[in-house]
Length: 211
Image 1 (cartoon, rainbow, N blue to C red):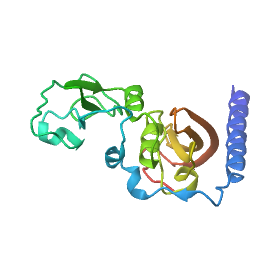
Image 2 (cartoon, rainbow, N blue to C red):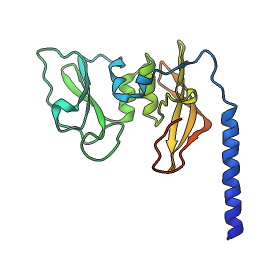
Image 3 (tube, helix red, strand yellow):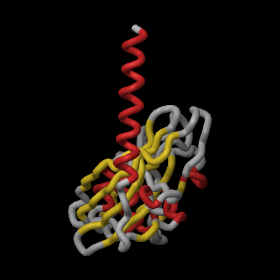
Image 4 (tube, rainbow, N blue to C red):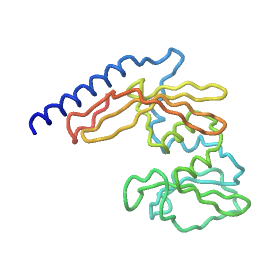
């Protein structure tokens, strides 16, 4: 039993070394820019959405029971239009159970209200990827995050057909962050990703420090 435990520790230690060596060899090309720190706030990304279809009005909300506090963002609303709809039972970016735990979109198309309340539906609403904030929202629907504290988790390049991002994924306790290289097809929203390895590991479960 002791021998088995010893070999397990050796395997884990070796895998961490190999991961760190691989990560150390990853460099960011000179034509990549740093993602502005303000764009790591999801709520500030919604105003940049250019919907893939024609909607006369749309807004992003949380499931807050207070109607005024629930609205995160809303487009220009015609004076003659009022929308009164019940809260959906679920949404995208679920963070907890209870009040103000997820978000959703309520849009008006041809005088009818339409909900977008899942990650896939948010991708459908975004449609073609027109800009960097849309790209960041898109990768968040797949569990990726932008960590502006490190170039390998917060850099980007925009071309006519593709947007390229270096982003982050977290897992485990103590927390471990991995860098990912992401390629997004701007027309279809299709995403490809490649793991670059671990770039940060917390010392304990209570530590909340980025580097």
